[in-house]
Length: 54
Image (tube, rainbow, N blue to C red; front, top):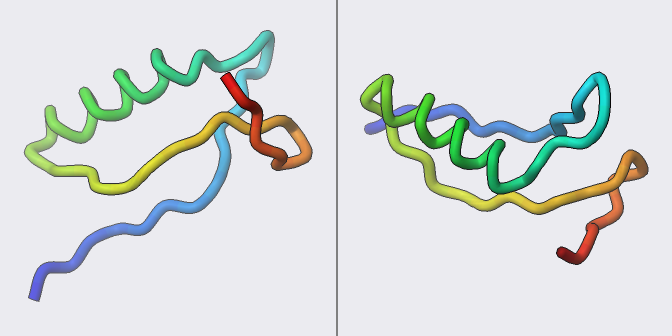
């Protein structure tokens, strides 16, 4: 049986905004550089947790 990590949370910049595409690119690069895989999704949200349509 494979074991994995499920991540639930949000990432915000200390100044300005986090660019969704840039974050995902860096996240996937980090995951793959460690020989791991990622399966799941992501969405852009505001500080109240509401979806933001791009």
